[in-house]
Length: 269
Image (cartoon, rainbow, N blue to C red; front, side):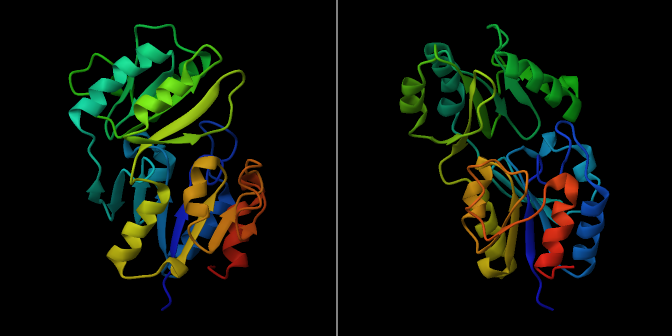
């Protein structure tokens, strides 16, 4: 059997309807058929594992690439986890304070907010989403003695010193510009060497397969590392403009059977 590896982003790709969202029935049908046909199914998300929605975890995916490649899980076993040095983790608190940038640090089990400043509005909503994804006890603050996080996201405005922020974080993190949220800019910071693409490479090597065996599905700018890494790349019809035109195929939107249509197009079901 010519077994393939299928990688799916979550928000806007598998989940429709905004947040918290829902998985369309046609997508569930397509995923089940692809798995029945013997293909590997993986989540490849910027979310760390603890904050992956339960409705995603309820489906028997073969594995997860979490936190933009900072953790890789196959059949319930963590095969790889990137750990940040103490000085990098704890030094970030001072960088936020110096630059007027705000963010949330995302770990395998907890996330960390700065409770000593008035949060930007997007962070208020995000805090509620994280609380629903995990539980209120999963929300910690920057005073936590562990600060055990894998990557982080930020928001900044015209008053933030983003140039200094990039200078101070650049030696350790890649800066992924995301879609603007109102008056606030949005970015994701991932340790150098980790990405959605590096997660694919790890699993391809581990399973003894090839990048030509991979199919990736995404909609956002943080999906570009994987969408431009393989030849069989699928952009959802609802993708951000920065994504459209950079894939081998554009399917219909997620809420218009986009996953099912793409799986049929590539003869995976």
